[in-house]
Length: 509
Image 1 (cartoon, rainbow, N blue to C red):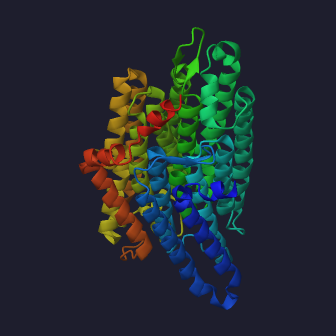
Image 2 (image 1 turned 45 degrees about the vertical axis):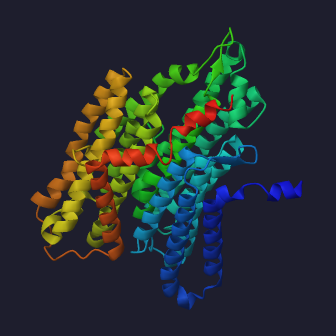
Image 3 (image 1 turned 120 degrees about the vertical axis):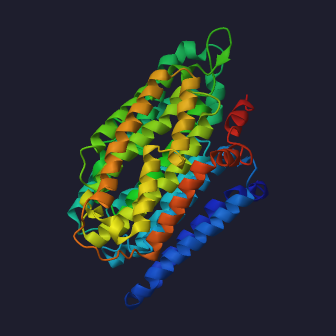
C-alpha cells in the first residue's frame, strides 16, 4: 500500500511542491536573520520569491499537454488547470516584482511575512484550479483567503488598513460559511465530496425529480459564497474599502490573482458537479446550467451596471479601481451566462488581458501616488509633462480597460460580446456595450488629469525600476493581445486545450 502511494504521479504537483519549498525557504530565512541585517534581507526575500516562481513556471511548462490525476481526483492536471495556473503564477510574479520597490514597507518588520503570505495565497489559488474534490477546493480557498486577510492588515499602525482587514475577514467568514452550507447539501445529496462522483449521482435516472429543489438550493448557496471571492454585485460590499485600505501591491494581487482563482473554482464546480443531470425517462442534459444561466446573467448585469456607475463618483483612484474590478467581474460572467462551447476560452482570454492591463495600471498608481503622497486622482495632474512615457503607457492601459480598439481589453470584450450575441443574449450584450461606454468617462478622468491639468511640480518623475518593469510588461502584453488576438487564442485553444474541460468531464460517464 505504501509503495502504491509512493508510485503515484506526484510530478503533476511539481509547481505546487516548488512553491511550497520556496515558502519554507523564505520562512527559514525570516526566522534566522538578525535585526541588524533586515535591510539586506529586504532584497533577498523578493529575489528568492521571484526565483521560486520562475522555477515553478518552468515546471508548469514541462507539464503542458499532460492530463492526469492523483488521490481519486482530489488533485488533477488538465488544460483548464494549466491555463489558470499560468495566470496565477504570472500575476504573482508581477506583483512580487512590483513589491521590490517598497510597496509594502510601511513597517519593515512585515516584509518577510508579506512575501510568505503572497506565495501561500498563490499556492491556494493553484490548488483551487486543480482540485476535483470539495475538501481540496476548500483547503485551497482558505489558503488564499486567510493569507489575503493578513496581507490586507499588514500595516498594523494604519487605521484604514485595519478597518479594511476587519471588514474583509467578517465578509469572508460569512461567504465561506455560505459556501460550506451549499457544499454540505452537495455532500448530503451525493454521499461523496468528489465532484465527478457527484455528477454521476446527479445523472442517475429520475434523480432530479426527487431531489431537484435541494440541488438548486445547493447551487444557490455555492454561487453566493463564491460571488464574494470574485466580487460581483450584490456580494461586493467588501471590495471598495479593502482595495482602498490595503497596500497597493496587495490590492493589485486581489484584483487579478484572487479573482482568477475564484473564477477557476466557480467553473470547476459548475462544469463538474452540475455537468449532467437526469429527469424521468433517463435522458441526461445540462439542464441546471441552462436554467441557472439567467441567475448568472442577472449577477453579470448588476455588476456591470453598478460597478461602472459607482466608479463615476470616486475621487480615490484605488477605490475607483475597486468598482472597475466589480464591473470587470460582470464582463467575465457574461460567457458563463451565455453558455456556449467557447465560453472557457472567452473567460481565460479576458483574464489574461485583464492581468497585463490591470497590473500595469496598478504599477503606475503605486509609483505616482507614493511619490505624490496622495491616492486621489489629482495625483496624476501634469504627469505628461513630468514623464511622457509613463503618461502614454497609462493612457494605453486605461483605454484597454475601457475596451478601446487595438488593445487586449478590446479584443477580450469583443470576443465575449460576439459569444453573447451568437447565443441570443442580446440584452446582456447591450448592457455590456452601454456600460463599456460609461467606463470611458471615469478612465478619461485620469487621462484628463495627466494631459490637461497642471501639476504642483514639473520636476521629472523618477519611478523605481520595479514600477517601470511591471508597467512595461503590462503595456507589451496589452498591445500583443490587441494586435495579435488570434495568436493568443491559438495558445489558449491548441497547446493547452482548454476545451478538454468538457472532454474530460464527459468521458467520466
